Structures are given as C-alpha cells and as structure tokens.
Image 1 (cartoon, rainbow, N blue to C red):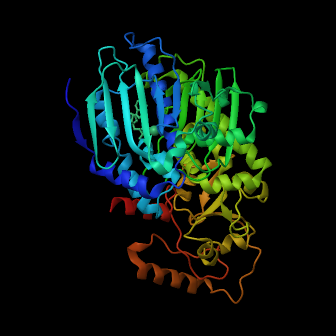
Image 2: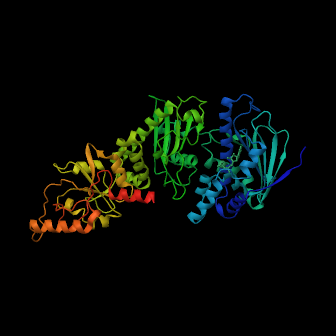
Image 3: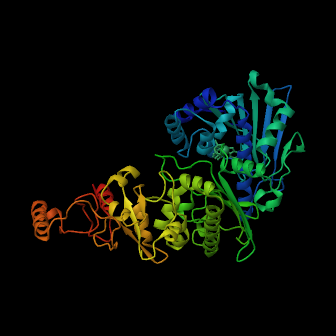
Length: 544
Ligand code: ADP
Ligand code: MG
C-alpha cells in the first residue's frame, strides 16, 4: 500500500476556511444541512448516472443517507451511497475551490461589509463549514466506477490534508467528524434529530438517523395546493434556493395538457443579482418525476426570468435527456411557452387583485420585466401591461400602467406620450411638460435610463403609438391656457428665428415658432423618430 500523501489547501481555501471557522456562523448547526445536502447531491448524481451507465459499483445499495451519532466517542458520521469521488475529484473538489465560488465569496463578503449565512449557500463553501465544529474530519469515499479505488481524505482544517488509499470501501462517501470538545453536543442523537427535522425534511432520499428514518415528506411541488401550508412553502423555498430570506410570492401550478407539468416558482425576497457580480443563471431546477435533470437549465425560460427560484417537473420529458440535447428540444420550448404565459398571467392577476403586492414585485424585479419587453419578442405583448411608470398624473413615488393611462386618455388623444429625465423634479420643472399640462394630456415619466429604450422597442400599446415628448412634429391640439402678455408680431418672430438659426448654425436643423409652450420661451425638439436624446447619449457612452 502507498503512504499517505500530504497536500496543502489552495490559498483561497485557507482564506475561506479562516472566515468560515472564525467569524462566519453564529449558527454552527448549519454544517449538518451542508453535509446532508452534499450527500443528497451525490445520490442525485448517481441516480442520473444509473440511467446511462451499466457497470456501477454496489449497484444494489439503497439510495439513502445514513447518519450515526456516537456520544461516547464524540463523533458524528454522515454516509451516502452516492456517486463518490476519485482521488483527483477529492483534490479538485475539496482541496481546491474549482468553481470560482471562493473568490466571488470573498469579494461578496468585502462588498456586503461582513459575512452572512446567505452568502455561504450561494457561493458553495458548504463543505468547509464542518470545520467550525470539527477537530478532525475523515472522508472515506469510493467512486461509482467498478474499476475505481477507495480513498481516505483527512484534515484538521488548519492548512493541510492527507490522502491515502483505503481498501474495502463501499460506493459513495462516508464523512466521520471528530467533534471539538466545546461542540460535543453534535454527537447527541436528540440534537441532530432536531436539526434534521428543520433542514432536511425536503431531501428526496431517505435520511436515517441511527437506523430510523427522519424525513417523510414527499415532493412539495407534486402535492396539490390545498395540501401544502404556507409554512411548508416558505421552508421549501429556503431549502431549494439555499436562501435565508422569505420569498415575496410564489406560483404553484399543475397541468396535464398540452404537457404534464408541475411547477413551483418563487419570487425571492430580494433581487438575487448583486451589482458587480454579472448575470445569475436560471435558478429553477428541472425534474422529471422527481429526478433532477438539470439544476440550472439554460433554455427552460427566457433570460429575463432568471431571477426566479423553484422547481419545474414534467413527466413528459425523456428521463435520459442529456443537458446538451435539452438545449434544442421542442419539448423544452413548449414547456417554456406554457410556463412563461402562466407566470405573466399570475402577475397580471396580482396587479389587479393586490396592487400593493404587485408594486413590491415591480420595485424589486421590474428591471427583469423591462428586459423582457425590450428583448423577448414572443412575450412582449403579454408583458407590456405589467410595466409601471410615474406620470404627470401620479403622485411622486406612485406609478401607473399603460392600461390605466389609456383608460384616462381624452377622446381626441391618439398617442401615448413619455418624457425622459434623471428624476421627477427635473422633468416637472423643464419646458417639455408645459405644453402637455396646459392641454390636460398625461405624460409618462421615464426616470430609469432604460425606460425610453423599452418603450421605443415596444413602440405601441393597444394600437396607440408610444411617442417621446421631445418629438418635433406632435399635434397636441389647442391649449386651455392663454399665455400672459402680448405675442410678438409675425415679422419679429421670423427675425428672431433667423437670428437663432444663424447663431446656433449646424447644431440645429430648424428654428420655428410653435404653439406648444406656455411659460418658457424656447425648447429643443427632436427630429429623429427612432431615437430620443437619451438613447443617443447612451449610444455615445457605449461607443466611447
Ligand atoms: P457545493 O456543494 O456547493 O458544490 P461544497 O463545498 O458543499 O460545495 O462541496 C464541494 C464539492 O465537493 C461538491 O461540489 C462535490 O463535488 C464534492 N462533494 C462534497 N460532498 C460530497 C459527497 N458526499 N459525495 C460526493 N461528492 C461530494
Ligand atoms: Mg454543498
């Protein structure tokens, strides 16, 4: 037999270990959740492998997780009959941080001004949490390959670990935790039972504690709505999204035609896309009859739906569908269609029945819906009524939708007007609004820099053109207000226009007298029908 090889943890791992062990968790018990969820992941991967591979070691072993406590020895053991790890996988997965998780994690900690539990789940430093309570951790493992070997990985978490061959291992992974003196409580059956009941009730595989099964709940998304309590919905969200916040809302949906679908989609408690971290991946896992097909399916939903969490299960998917072939499957496209429409309907209903809740959703996820209007041609029309803007007829901070705008339109008004500005105050004090105000015409306020781009792409709503208030050739009709003072005579007006054109030269196309203004003497208008001044500024900024 070979002698144990000594390895050093990668520098980043050391850093993560330091944070996790010394400052991170006030709630030490979370390590149990992390290890059990790894065991469950390993079983899921094995189940998937069994669909396509024949030569599987110990193929008759149950897909289950066995946990044992030894109070006298001060140890806790967590064993799964999952996919196991080869020697290279041991080094790659739990000695290095292969995914860029650790770096992002460290940066996120810096950015949020401190570590918190939510970050851990998100960046996958889960395994290392065991060193909060462990004096020593032994990981015995054997990969699913019949030809593979068993290994022991062992470390006290201080900077080094050893790996040596270990004969007689069954398939999967067994983690033996020797607890620190001050954390001996985790070798007590009652303590672990309480933790498992809290965190592991949604695990899809049997979890046995000292020989007795502790999780008996079935998949939440397959149950009928009336059988799931609000508390269960919230707990499942935390479990599935690895979140510590509460979901803002959820949609539980079942259908038999045209496809068999069970879906449970959550709106997270906050926007999961943090500034500076780029785009997140789709957070809705795809299952077929409870078997996980893909935890982050890229083509399941249009891009703008990436903020959602949850599960989609379709019994119509072929079980052995590969992630690659899924990309262009007609079935997935159909699934996506049905679910996207359902989600849009869910939001439209909410906007009608519970305005306050919808406004909260809009505040947090409005940017994704705007992205949908701008980029998702298929669902643009469905999404348009969900857009919200402040307007010249709303109070500051309150919003209106396009439908409500249209309902308020005066009989002879044919177009929908919007105006761009950095904030409400600037728009209200500028010259563009006064011509509309004096005629009693409502104008939508585009305060977010992408707003006029979104409306420009939408281009119309209920066959009414969306038109920028800076457009030069608007026909607004007669004003109700008569300007104070005397008007210039025609000759002086013409003289003034000529002088302005000569003075401004190439910077303007034309200077003319108009009827739009009430108090202000002049305003610049836009002759370009395709682009507003704001869009030109954005384009210029992108090109420079
Ligand atoms: P994450 O689960 O987010 O990937 P972890 O730190 O919890 O991060 O685990 C790191 C990796 O170690 C896992 O991705 C997996 O490859 C491997 N691993 C951990 N526990 C097990 C296990 N019980 N069986 C097989 N592989 C495991
Ligand atoms: Mg994990």
